Amino acid sequence: MDKLIIEGGYKLNGEVTVSGAKNAALPILCASLLAETPLNLSSVAALKDIDTTIKLLDTMGVKIAREADKVSLDASDVQSFEATYEMVKTMRASILVLGPLLARFGTARVSLPGGCAIGSRPVDLHIKGLQAMGAAIHITHGYIQASTLHLPNRRLQGARYYMDMVTVTGTENLMMAASLAEGTTVLENAAKEPEVVDLAECLIKMGANITGAGTDVITIVGVEKLNGATHNIVCDRIEAGTYMVAAAMTGGEVKLLNARADLLDAVIEKLRDAGVTVSSDASTITVKSDGNLKAVNIRTAPHPAFPTDMQAQFMALNTIAIGVAKVTETIFENRFMHVQEMQRLGADISIDGNTALVKGVEYLDGAIVMATDLRASASLVLAGLVARGETVIERIYHLDRGYEYLEEKLTKLGAKVRRAH
Image (cartoon, rainbow, N blue to C red):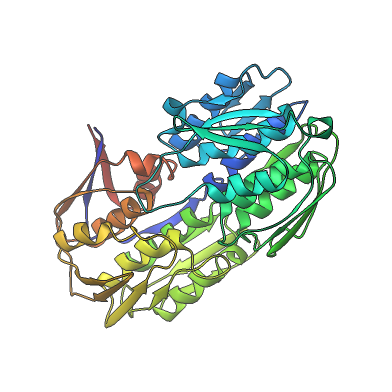
């Protein structure tokens, strides 16, 4: 199994290009199932989760052509309406085929999902939303069995649906399903994440009638059919945020290309609170730091508040900052699994419920650590970049799910990072 070996103590300097967002690409790849002609995408990152999604769509009969960061998907001849456990167990986002399959073909059989062990992310909101639109749904033998064959014209029916918890994939699944429903669907308490907006923009190019994406009320007027389109995936704000923290912690100056500051307001504000200089224009962000960081309190919440996917990285920053920081996680209950590993590097962290108290230490020491989930892996890389001596991070397959060419990008910035088998 691959591992990363990091020699700490090198400042990061230079330019790095931010890849297309994984969390935008996954639903948009699944949206190809809605279209009767090819969907052409660019800025599709080379990531494990994207490979898994493409493989899943291929098993259904979607014809796929992929070259560099471009992917063309032709779902004109879909043969299978099933996402098997084998395909779904490694990635929760596979649930995103449920809405499109049901909306276009009137039937779907999708395994209950797996993915990162960061807490319960129930799919019941997806199911209740589809049921509100008239779908008949049964869960048997670990599979969601869904049908619209009993409905007028075998089509989902527009509905008003309030999600009692903000869910990004739930919002995306129901928005895709509603695009081909009969009548108007109103999704209330919808997720506002930039990735939801990017999906909506792609669906609109395909012929969907959607308003309100980016607010907590999204209105979708169903259309009879959708066609393919050409769409460039939005930049990955979490990858950008991770490199920004890396620059801050190592005391360097890094310019991020293909990055949007307007998607990172909460992260930028916290970096500035930590004493970091951040400047930006329409498509670049520059981070400059002398490495003397002040502790910053973090509280995660749905967008536009501080993202849960940046919590672990800021915990890494706080381990070497001056002062004491409170890090409160409100989204996922298991999202402190990196704490134990950071303690192995010498971090002073104590946990009380969903809050971690981080006391900055003068230095971290390299050690062998184990990655437990995607963003925890990133936080251990950041800690390794500043730790004295060598840090070995095992089980980095999590990293490959969400960071494209991580060691190459870090090496180009001056880090000493290599992959070993």
